[in-house]
Length: 190
Ligand code: PRP
Figure 1 (spheres, rainbow, N blue to C red):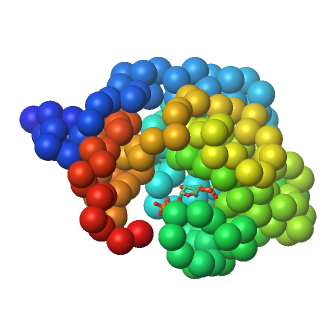
Figure 2: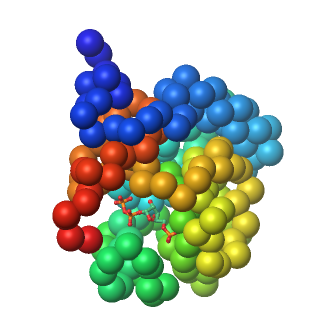
């Protein structure tokens, strides 16, 4: 009762990768570090929809400094599972970032293309500084070098869902991060 756990979707999940308590402990650790590093900075957190929402909520509530928050919706041009490199803004910030200290909050860095584009874009818009917090990284898939200052967990190159990450919009509300059973996506077109 109370939250969606692996047991509630057991038929779709192969195994758990990061437990709910490990996620929250790591986020709390990073939040302590960010609170120390950015005391007095008037930091703007930017969450990338939709996957980063869960991380944004947990992270912002674990900070001990006042921040402001905004969100952006992005999509890569082209379809399929590989990012093509060019990014389209579906929904922009409502904040003028000129002169602001920005911390981008991401659920996962895969190729790194989304993040590299976003960091460049905020610099073009005149941000005073741009740093990144990513809960997950898949080092095996990285194509573009982009600095992730605050980093949660490295994970293997497997199809993961939960804590914001979806398969076909499902499983975002799973409380942990888990590997999907191949049977769930086999036969489905990308
Ligand atoms: C995911 C993730 C990042 C991006 C990472 O978003 O949240 O924004 O892909 O991939 P990259 O490093 O290869 O650029 P997705 O497009 O799945 O959208 P969603 O967050 O709405 O699920």
